[in-house]
Image (cartoon, rainbow, N blue to C red; front, top):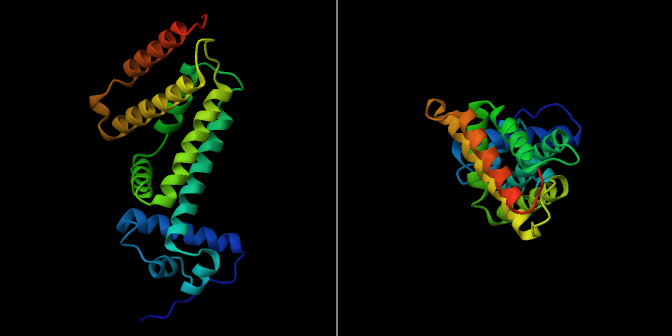
Length: 201
């Protein structure tokens, strides 16, 4: 077996970044189950010992990768949202962020999330993050007085589901979807729904 020529001495955060970048490429290419820690280390030009110095297991590397993606996305979302916005504005900001993605990057993201959902430890983390996103929605979105907290959470998840669906269709089959018409329809539905819950517009 060819000996690894380890990269020069680097700060710990740089080595972790190398390992996460390597893991991301291999997981997208081969799948999480088929990827080994040895391959991750070798692809990052590090030894297996260096990998275990930073991470306890392959699962921990994957969890850290999902966390870094999730935290980055949340940070971008928070920076684009106003302190108080309407449900339609929340929808529009989310959709804009999703449709800015490159098709290959979006495909990789979908693949990573699908694989992550099959790992129990990571699925629990994703579930908590989804809850935190609905908390952000409740904190930032001004809703009519008739909304119960549970209903508001359900509305947040519905908006996320619609955004993921529309952005995915737009990238996979752009000729099959009239995005302007879809946005207009969803905006009307959100406005009408909120008005029915007591919001004056």
